[in-house]
Length: 358
Image (cartoon, rainbow, N blue to C red):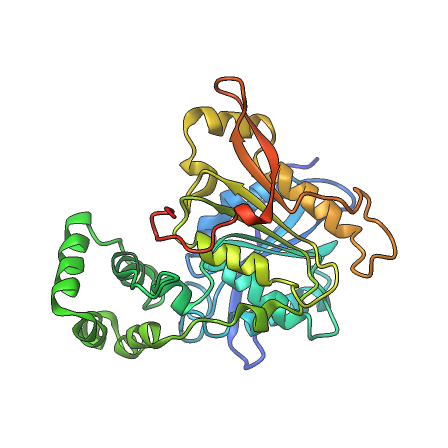
C-alpha cells in the first residue's frame, strides 16, 4: 500500500451548466480498487477527509462533492431540489473521464443519504453508469419528512436549528446557542404555526429567498416513497437506529425500496444509536463494534454480496441467497459483550417520535 495523498480537485458541470466542485481521494493501494464511493454534501466537502480516508483504507476511491450552491459549488442552494439530477451528472462525468475505478457506490448520512438515493433513482433510467449499491445512513429524506413527524406534528426545535445553521447561504452558520434555540422555539410555539412560517426566518436576516425557502419547507407534502423508489433494483443498505430522529422514515424507505421490482437486495443494519450512529454508543458497545471491524466491516460484506447479486434469481450470489434482511447490534448473553443478530423486518418501527421512542 502507498501512503495516502491529498485529494485531487474536480470541477464538474451539471446538466444546466452549473459548476460543481469535488475532491477525489484515491485508495492507498496498488492495483485494482474495490470501487468508487460518491458522497455529495451540503456540509462542506473539506470536512469529510476523515470519512473519505476511512473508505480509502477499506480499498475504495472516494469523491466528495459540495452540492449546488454550497461551499465550492456554484448555483443557488435550495435544499432537496436537484440532488438526483446533479448526482447523476456527477456519476456520468466520473465514468466519462476515466475517474470511476471499479463499481460506483452512492453513499452518505443524513442529507447526504438523500443525495445518494435520489442519484440512484435518476441513474436507473440512464444507460450508464449503473450503481453497484446505495449505502444510506440515518437518511433525511425530504422537506416534509424532516419537517414533520409521521403523524404530522411539526419538528419545530430541530428544524429551527438546522435551517438557521445550514438552510440558507453559501456556507453553514454557527449553531444557535442552546438558550437562544429554546427561546425561539418557545416563541414559535406561543405565536403559532402561521406566524412561525411567515415571520421566523426572513430575507433581511438570512438573505434573498430565505422567506420563500422557509415557507416551502412547511408547505411540502409527504413523498410517495413507493412511487419514487418501488421500481428500483439497485441494492440498498440502510443503516438506522432506534434513537435516530428519522428512524420511521428510514424504515418506510426500506419497505418501499424495490417493492415492485423482483429480488431487489435490501438490507438494514439496526442498532441502539441516534443520528450520530456509532458515536452515540456507550464505551463498551462502541469498543465491541470496533473489535468486529465497525460498521465498515458490515458495509464491505454487503457490497461483496451486491457485486454478485442476480436480480433475476438465475444464479445465487457469492454469499448465497439467504442473507438476513435485518441485522441488529445488541447485547450478548454475557455481560459487556455485543454481537450482530438477525432480526425480522417486522421489528423495524412504523411510527416513532423524534426522540426515537414508540
